[in-house]
Structure formats: C-alpha cells, structure tokens
Image (cartoon, rainbow, N blue to C red):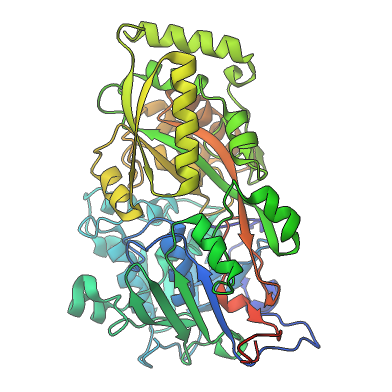
Length: 550
C-alpha cells in the first residue's frame, strides 16, 4: 500500500543518506499562532473491525491504518514522496546491493526495553517464513532481498534471509539485484519490527492491550471487539516531543450512513468514507469539511481461475467487456473515480500504461464480442452462465455489485448470485480459494506498477486468483531487471496486455478517497496511497458544548 517515489538512487560506491538530505522528521507541523485545544483527542472511523494487529497477518488499510500509528519502520515516505529517516537515522549502500542502516541510539519499545537491530532481523525472518503464512510473505522477495523468495517458497530456511545485525544499532541488508524502489518499499508496515519475546510468550494474543509493546507514536490501551480500539501517546517513542494528539480512538463502523450520522452528532472527527448517495448533498451543505483525495488504488472483481466457470479465460474476458465501467464510475459512484481497464494505474512511477484495444470499442461491439466468447465457452440462453459474486459488507460494495450483476444480466443473460461476508471472513474465504468471483481492491505499497502486478505473479502470497502465466512472470522479471523507467514501462505494458487477455480480475475503477473532516482537525494530509497518520495531526481550539476546551 504506500509510496510516491521521486528520489533517484545513484550508483555510487558509498552513498550516505542523512536527515539533512530529506528535511526534518515527519510529525505534526502546527502553524505559528495556532491555538491548540486543551484536550488533544481524535476519533476516527476505521471502516471495519481489524482482522488482526499483527503486521505479518494482515493485508489491508483496515489494519495498516492502526498498525502505522502503533509501530514504526526504518524509514517512511512523506505525502510529497520524500524518504524520511525513522528508526534508522542514516544509511549507506554499496553498488545498490549492500545496504547498511544505523539505528537511532537509545531506541526502546513502549515498555522501555531496548529495541535493537536483532529485533528487525527476527521480524523480517518471521514475515517470510512459510510457517507464518503472511499475506505479505512475498514482499521481501519483491524487494529483491537475498534468499527471500526461496524462503517464502519453502526452499531455504528463514535464517538465510539477506539481513543481519552487525551490532545492536547496525543492520545490513543484502539484495540479489539493484532495486531503485528499495527505500520506498522499505516503508511498508509489514516490515516494522515486533517483539520476539511477546510473540513467543503469548502467541496470537500478543497484540492484546495487556501484552503489546509498540515502537511508534502510540500504544494500544483498549480493544473492545466490534466497538472501538483506543491508543494513547507512547512516552518512550523517540520523536514523542513532536507528537500532539494524546489519544486516538478507532471505530469499526462498516455502515457509511451510520459513520456520517455520528460525525454530524459530533461523535467522530474523521469519516472513513462518504456514502455515494449522500455525496452531492454533502458537497452543498458541508463542502468545507469534505476532502476528496486522489489515491493509487484499483477496485476489481477477482476470479478463482482454477475452477469452473472461471478456469476459462473466454468467460472472464467476456464479463470484462460487458461491464459498463463508465456508468459505475460516473453514475453509481460519481465522486471523481475513473473507469479502469488496467489493474495498476494509467500513470504510475513515471510510466504511462495503455488500455487494451477493446476498451475503446463502441459498447455494442464489446457486447457482441462478449456474447461470442460466452458462446464459444458453451453458454447461451438455454444454458446461461451462473456464478456467485462475493463482497465484504459495505453499502457501496453492495451498490456496485447490484449494478454489475444487472449489467451482466442485461448485456449477456448472466445470472449472478450476490453474497456478502464480514471483512475478516471474506479474507479467509479468499485465501482458502472458496469463491467464484470476489470484490477486492489493491492500494499501492509504493509508486510503481509492480506493486499491483506482482499480486498476479505465479506463487505470490497475494495471488488468491491462482492465475499463472509464464509469459506474465517473465515480463515482471524483465521489468525488475530494467535499468531505466522507459524499459520498465515496456515490460509493465506487456504484463498489462496479458492481464487484459487472460483477465484473472476485472478492473472496475481507480479510486479517490472521500472523507468528512472536522474543521478543528489540523494536519490531515492523506498521501497518494490514502494513508493519514495521527502523529501528523492536531486539534485546534474551538467552541464546544461540553466546555472541555475543544
């Protein structure tokens, strides 16, 4: 999920990166003269109950929103795309293959015990280990950390991972090939260190408030399932002096309407997302509180490509052709979303990717071709295609699913059964491959098309479609080896062309993020990946019926 990459990594024998190169540490920037509220507390809706707070067991912003407030990695990326030193205060590299990171002196966990380079080594080994079964097990391999890919596939032991602690404050990472996106990828929350002692002592209960220790600006103090999570300022955090918010409450409200109602009642400061059926009215009545931000994210319908009816690419391609994406983006949603014909993004990481030819065909021609493909696959009026479309419980997902099923019925005579599950249950269904088609989305982990395309590579831990095409895998291998943006773009286009032909997933639209934000919340600046961090925010003084200084 995360980054805008503007920094060019030069091939020097020793390239030293210091704080001065990137500006001050990322934190709340309160403008001079701003009057702060006496009570620095924030309430934000998080959209759903998190499946876990173990960074190695999760895969979406539902969890990473909270994890990113509790834990910190070696670096972060600013909304402008600059690399920021975090747990690491500086680093150097040799030939872009051997990276040495120097941790800040005196780092501790929230309980005051020392946080060392050995903690990072163990955490990364746990991430890639097959016994952990992390959705992000493939990520270190995508970063080209030595032996990571082989470990994730069970071919080598976790102890062979190309990372080692030279001492308590020095970490060395070995890559098997240069990676221009390495620092940006390093900011991903799956790579934050966690405490080995706690994990081994409490197993899957180590994230409970009574056990957890954290490395970031906040520590978890309360977790009432399906009601709220509460985190309070971590006094042991190395940059605590620049944190302003003292307490943050995350609400797992999946109803968009309830989210807005509680916002209007003064119970929530930041709405997770604005209901599509209220957007126009809220623009008129609360436009100064409405934030619409671009986001590197794609909404899609993923197929189980290993069982009928979607083990036939003709069927998958027919449904892609017969979906009226302009209507979904412009009419069903209508908040600025763009219809999608590529899985990644039309413009990402300096690369422009083109839609398949059939995207520009007249609608009638696309539907005629889709009917032909279904007929070739053995489906007609007397034997219609029937399947179940799964989505996680959320009002907008239901609206889109109803619209899509209606389009397929009208255009192709397809019978679609709609099924909804809670977020955590749906993830389990996906990873056990017990579905026909499922609503999913991917938010960029960094500003490069590979962050989307790798999830459909053979054997990737996020490839729940089980799609496999050697030509596709080869295109991505070539892109990873490419030494310049133009060459990478050529191979990414090859990969997108294959996805348009094979259609393991139907790209539906490219996201925008919509929020309602109280006018007294300062420092709300979502990045291109849609993330906004509590440590960057503050509460301005404002009138309050409770008289508490807010």
